[in-house]
Image (cartoon, rainbow, N blue to C red; front, side, top):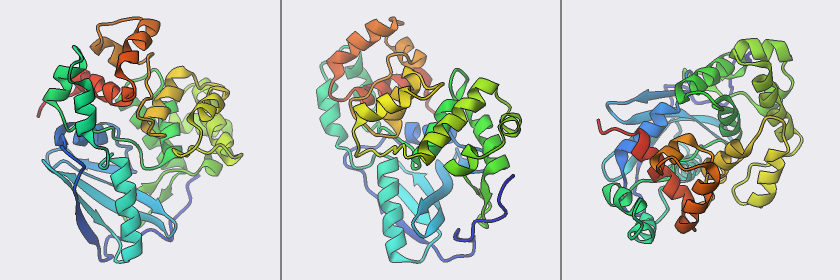
Length: 301
């Protein structure tokens, strides 16, 4: 099922580059490291929780390159398996976007300062950033696999998918399966490999085939139009579409009113009530969402 090698992937012996990436404003290292660790796909990503480092492959035009980000109290150290200046610059740009290092979180903190719910959360973690995904298709598939299950179960499913259909690399990590590979997989074989229901496996293939046919998960595109395209896919409901708006399209005002964890932090309102309450947090509802998620799930080490 899986191809045998990724010819362009750098091997562990390749001379590397490193740089310190300075955020625009404060940085809350603990929550950033935790979200990377909690969502890591087995085989595709490796995490050292105690050292707050995270290793994975990032794909650039020259091929996948292994990178490690180490989340420090005030900045992020990036190391990459490439000696090429242009490649390293591309990896720096991808990483800064992935970890949301360029957002002026001070502006967001001031916007929420007087809010009775968000104000205390932002004052506690003024450097909380909206960590995304470096690969849009991977994010879409992992969102489907994470529907109505725990984060741990979703990552387990993702690891099985990668093992069966991903591409092993000399770095010891696996390249996440391509849209075409998943789209063309034999259905029952795919379902059995992941260990999900027929409905969930079908949704995985619906997303893959849509991407092969031209669905473009581009943050610079028309977000409203893309949300409609996502909702037209069988198995993609409002939560999945909204989650992708937040973590892939990087819409700072996107929100997931159906998210159970966020609503718990809001005092357990219904979906429509949560949507009404979130109106006060425009135009930074995505950052409000990250503060709600963090308040509900993150515990200081």
